[in-house]
Length: 203
Length: 152
Image (cartoon, rainbow over the protein chains, first blue to last red):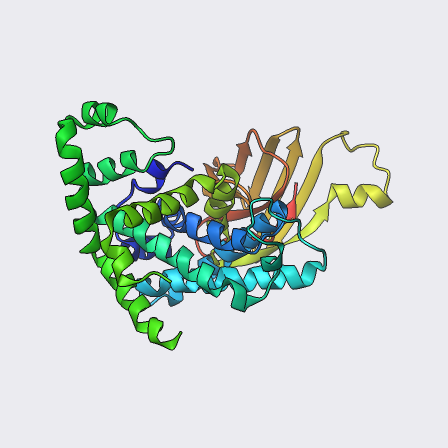
């Protein structure tokens, strides 16, 4: 799934939830597109076989469908999704009884497994990444576009960025700075960051 | 744990953003299809129709000479309504009784639902029907009806 696909729909989550409740498949599709990277990245943290990840995701979305009518506060949805995905993962891992294959990219074989304590920080990181994607959605299109181009891997040359966005190369740096400042002021960023600060003293 | 100073640093912020966007690229189209299809699980307000005949099950115990090879026949019954379906090589023909104009929706578990209108005799058809778990919902006048999941 391309970053540009995820960053296309700026409809507030609350509106998507409302429309999906009324049976609007398009709203549901847009809603899950927003949360797919979150569910996917959380599920991958548990280092399960590929088929198990798919089972987990299917189950999470079914639970979300059933949960739709109970959502009072859409801002709590990312947390709900992380917790639910996590629970389903643990359930699948306990139930399957087989040793999950090692992710060759994982840093250490010791972090394989289903100990929830081990993945707490990872889960918070996934939620933070979701908040950052939501924050990007709040930016004006031209600034978001600039950041997405600058974040490409492999990097896009400044000359190409300049051409695509119709801005002089010299203004790319200053615009990036302004875009990031603006990102820090978005509701999504501030809401998540305030929450993260609030939990920090307990650690 | 990220500290306030991390968020103030543009380069670290860009690093975090890059990771956040990389996660979107890891999402497969298959994951996406499963997520979109899950909407069919929404418990819509419908009365359940029961499967009363399935040729693929009946064929195991009965040898039916009249049955066309490869054709699967299914019958469902609900409150004051019945649904007959025949599937052959991706083509699905069906009839709703009592005959009247309405809508039938084929809901695959892993794909998009498709809705067709029934004609005045209650006939309807779908083409390009794949295998896998599906359910049907029938909208006529009055309450909606739906079948449970079965595998085509």
